[in-house]
Image (cartoon, rainbow, N blue to C red; front, side, top):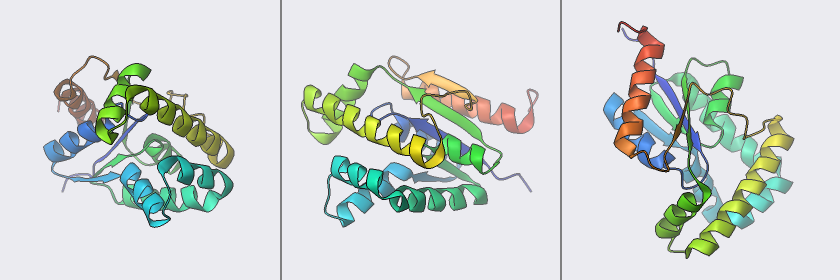
Length: 185
């Protein structure tokens, strides 16, 4: 019987976490759980935009706590690629055996990607990203004492500004294999 696999993939909006997480989960033959999709669904259920819902979450810690409790429970079960801004921190705080990945990317490239995804011009996407990131950083600091800019907990930090997703996926698979089985497989 093999050990359960937990890979966490985190990064700022537009960094490529969704693309990479889907490919990693497919390569490993395990589930992918995306915290952003859950957060967006919660925002839609409340009839709010992401920025509005983020602002509400700043006033109501129950929103983030509920989301993160659900993510932590699923991560603890293993055999999942957990994708969320705090996925690495969730695994760390829950003391879970995981390969923790942060995907970095230049701000202008991220804005372009978000603009294409959400049908926004680049300037509007840049403003939306900055607003969302500021809101999330404040909440994470207040609710969990987490500085999202602290990358020290990650096993692998990669920059997707110029690296294509297949290269990043291969780097993650290699790191996850090394972490689980040692350098000789």
